[in-house]
Length: 156
Image (cartoon, rainbow, N blue to C red):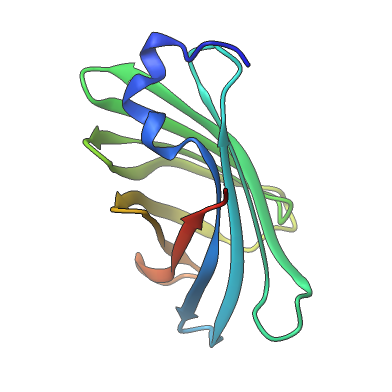
């Protein structure tokens, strides 16, 4: 395993694979629950790779996936680039303070067939042995609002 790049030390609390459950809501869809797995890995370069997948909590059928990179910028600043198979790509900027990362989109792009998403906010935070993840979005002509939140535990 490569040594963690010094720029990534503030993100070390995320490293590993986390599994858990979450709840989602949005005015244009029915509320839902899901199972989630998130991995944060590194290869010794100045970024941390991010991969996420969810399944329907009741059926186990795949629901969503996304992948990207956390890019520490020093002085507590961090960037996140995320691509989704739904045709949406996000560029976010934010801060890392202790075990808390808060990000807001600077650009959200979509393919011609993607649903219209105009803004996102994401947060990853660890409290004890639990990773929490949340996403707010402005989509389908609506203002920025809560969409999903999950609670995950590091896989041994």
